[in-house]
Length: 102
Image 1 (cartoon, rainbow, N blue to C red):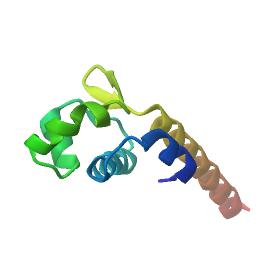
Image 2: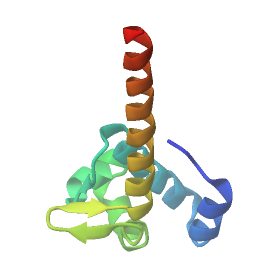
Image 3: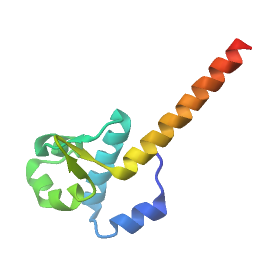
């Protein structure tokens, strides 16, 4: 998962240390699963490794980085990076197939 430190710090300067941790855990889950987050507070709290009480206190700030779309929460930046990574992987696979066939 690429992390552009300047962009990240610019966009998250208003977060507390605990909110940073929750947001990063949600982003890492997004990246490792390759799909949007569930729009479900119980699941989000679990992914962020927080109690429901703690999650509810930071919910609004952290969820503000994601757009609700039906039953999921989408990160536009994560989607761009995931698509970039999928393109790179496909190019490498194609190059490998080409190399193996010659």
